Image 1 (cartoon, one colour):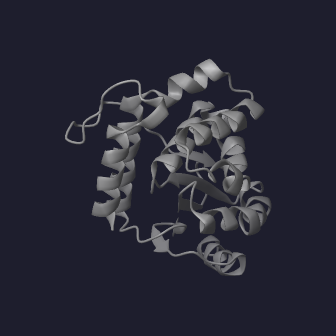
Image 2 (cartoon, rainbow, N blue to C red):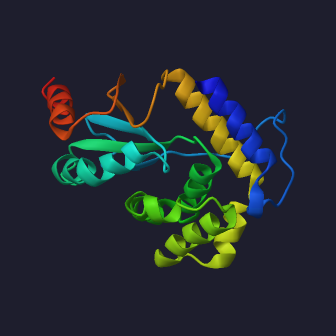
Length: 207
């Protein structure tokens, strides 16, 4: 599965569509660009929940609509856990969405990510890549981003390659099988209900 995804993303970088600014080759090594994870909650929390999700994954959007608000209210906002989001790229639309979210920096990343998930059916509905890019930029504008900044982010081919390389590294290390998946204090879990996740988290907090 990972090999197929890697090949697909390599092709994505070769055909960066309407936002191509520089040539990228599938064989070229990733540039020395830092690709950080974005997190909420205290850095020293007893429990860390790492979510692997794609911005174009319907099950991931469902998780963020149905489970994430409860998780945030009960565990993130109360400082009980550190929640880290790791992007998964199944397609170029998901990659572009992540680049727009990252364009907002640490302060705007999660608000933009929330909008991307909430409006997934709308912004990703078109087969026209130019329309999808404009839809994503519309979400960025709603979060206060300028077009010039978003254009620069979308045209950063070295950043895109580094993001894909980081995704592949993490997915391989954690034997990622699907999305959304969750790594709770080092143990991988598949998609689950809020009650199931609560049980795993409470068990870790009780240790």
